[in-house]
Each structure stands twice: as C-alpha cells, then as structure tokens.
Image (cartoon, rainbow, N blue to C red):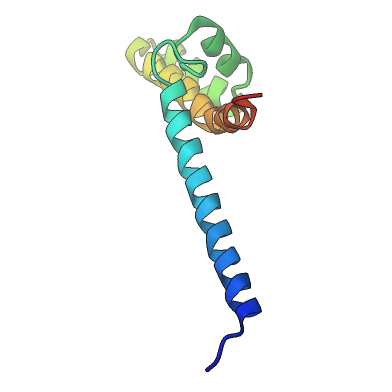
Length: 106
C-alpha cells in the first residue's frame, strides 16, 4: 500500500495533535494536584475554599451531615465534611488548572 506525501502529512499531523492533547491533559492533571496542596489556590481546607465547598454542597450532603450531627457522631460528621470539601475541590481544580495554563505568559 502506497501512502502519498499528503496522506503522510495528514497522519503525522493527526498524531502530533493527539500527542499535544495528551500532554495538555497530563499538564492539567499535574497542575490540579499541585494547586490542591496546602496553601494552593484550590486547597480544600483553606477557610475560603471550605466555605465555598459548603455553600455548593448538595441537599443530600447536608442531610447526611445533619443526620450525623443529630446522632452525636462528631467524628463521622467531620469525615463527611472532609469528603464534601475534598470532592468539591477535586472537581474544581482541573478548571482552575486549565485556566492557569492557558493564561501563563500573557
């Protein structure tokens, strides 16, 4: 099977673009992990970030938390609160990371 120069160029370009997308996705994941560390922009336990996560929590999250508090299970309530804020910032961090990467050097 003979591949023309144009077909070879198109395939090469497609591979290059796929590699670029993969590298970008890896960079976003890496940055998202970095900014979730203590002191990072998306640190789930920063007071402002904790407040944001709580205000964005679902009704089901609040119901579970209230149930644990009403039962006097402070340890489990604390664990649930940790889960709520960690989950929220794990979902938000990639958006922040992508924005940061897009705006570096501008």
